[in-house]
Length: 157
Image (cartoon, rainbow, N blue to C red; front, side, top):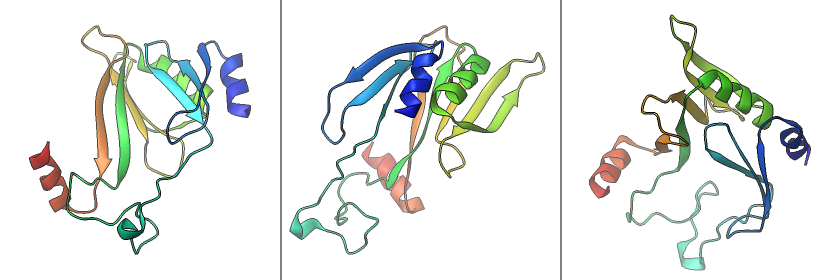
């Protein structure tokens, strides 16, 4: 609720509360100046595997049977914005994020910026929009355990 109050007091667009969805409780939505919709929530319903699918290790959601790409977790995503400096201000204000890396171009513009909200190197990156679009995604990355998992995922995709 503290974070919601900060967002509501900011200059950024507030969309408001939305109902619970599968796997999570109600959420608060807001938008950056570049058309990306953000959502924060607190309550999470963790996946519970059925008895025959439960893993031996507590850090796994389900026993691995060699099906699908099987990424360990979502690693990070990269969004595009016409003004990365403004996006940086949005991330620091609305999400309290820290900058871990930044590219400042010779002309003073920020060409890219990497943010973290936890103990990872970065969770989200933003690079300069070159195509004139709005609210665009550059890429999403997943973390895998081994090189072979990456090759297998590439074959599947």
